[in-house]
Image (cartoon, rainbow, N blue to C red):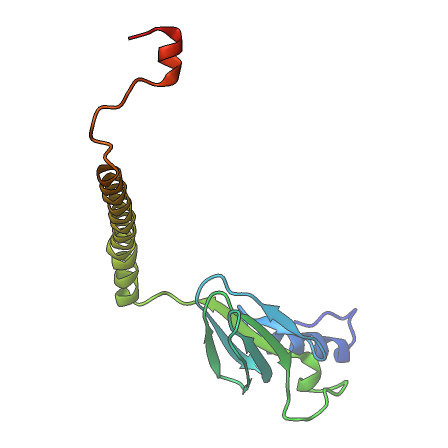
Length: 175
């Protein structure tokens, strides 16, 4: 039923705005930009309107621009920086109409496929310890080579023969 204390035009505006907002969506108003910094794989899906998406990769990677319209989606990897701005095909967001309401979008995490989870477990459980072991063996081999070199230099210099007592022992008359 209608509320008699509210004018019909106000009811229509309130009812229409609530009907246009989709459940679970974020709203980006016109003439605004939003930076997204995913910490895990995430999906950006445009439900209403359109956006100009700029994705800057990790250090040294080139940034990319693309336009996403209703129903389009983009998966973003962790560590990237994405900026979205409302875009309506070059039309200005006028004070009335759908363009003035902004863009509605969803931002949801994306589960890794089972194969990726398996490869992460392999990497964490086998590859990383193997790399540690190889590094440790390299260090041990380098230390062994230096030890052999030192022993050879010592043997060549004639250090195998017993040496005289140090001068401090002679002065202190110790055996």
